[in-house]
Length: 148
Image (cartoon, rainbow, N blue to C red; front, side, top):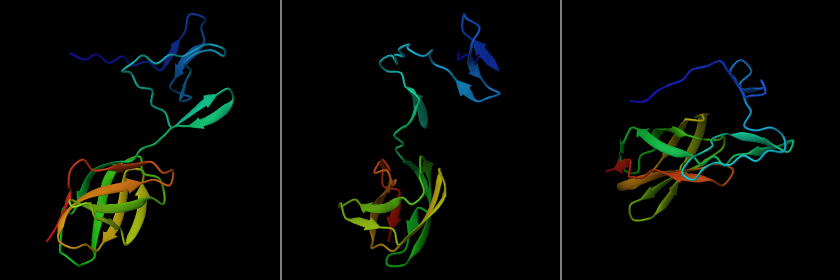
């Protein structure tokens, strides 16, 4: 059985706010302290403030699903891609099961979880790969698009 603890504010033993929901802040440690993330644990944040400098996290896009999942060969088809971690102006490719790489004809960034692309492909099965303008990329774990 999983437990959930919900609080608006959590304070340390000195009375300082560690988590403050109303301001959207989480303080991990006081200045000069070391924060250790145990092996197997993760710390997820888009940006961290380290020694007064903002440090961007690495955002790898993920491809969860597409729609439609079938297309006709040599006909331009609009494909909606759902996932996470998308950044404006990504490169999107359809990679055939034979390894051939095909760039999207057009890419429209809708949100960090949605892209719309047009592809004109020959018959085959395709993985979908998204590369952010940061150079970080993610590919579907299985072929998602069948073209016949």
